[in-house]
Length: 273
Image 1: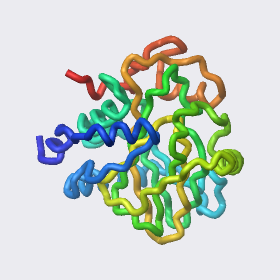
Image 2: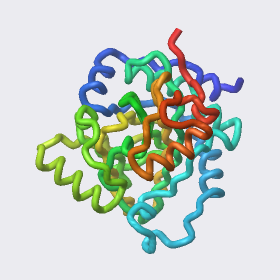
Image 3: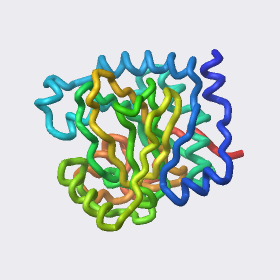
């Protein structure tokens, strides 16, 4: 085991105030979740795979809103042992379990999200409208692979919206941005942006937390790796939309409504002793 793998196996300790803050707000910012040397190594591997698998064939300006938002590549942990070690790391998974207050977590899936120079904004949305799950115990780690300066921009969260559950079934689009933006303004919901982030810092947010991200006006690629976790023991819900049907087929192969989320694509990555 090399020193980067050792770091991924070590625990990142949260204090009770951080857990309570996450429970209240539905999001949290943590520094130095992964050290500089380790994140530099994994950035190279992830970038190579993202560039090789990128299917965009049009310039950013010619894509729709979703296509302008980012290059999106999922299930990278199945591509190489190095990426498997990163995505399934106990260090990250324990943070997810601690924040959700559960004894074990599984991978729902991973996603690299690279916002290109000139890339568009990511509209307001709720991740969990895509997920056919019978729980609200879901959480996403959002980790920059490179430093993200203020002018490139990080995510903005609508604080406390995870407690509302479903707000709108609209998928990520101009319409979701308008509808949810009006909802946030109308309810005077606080908006939180953590500003510049270092490589290896991370935010964690709940599946129902409404969030967005600005466009990238710079010549600098915003490279982010995300991992979505779900509590162990969760079952697949009856899909309520075509998007959820697609997610069920893609991320839960061979399974259906009522089955445990435990396919070969959903390994158990942390279990409390």
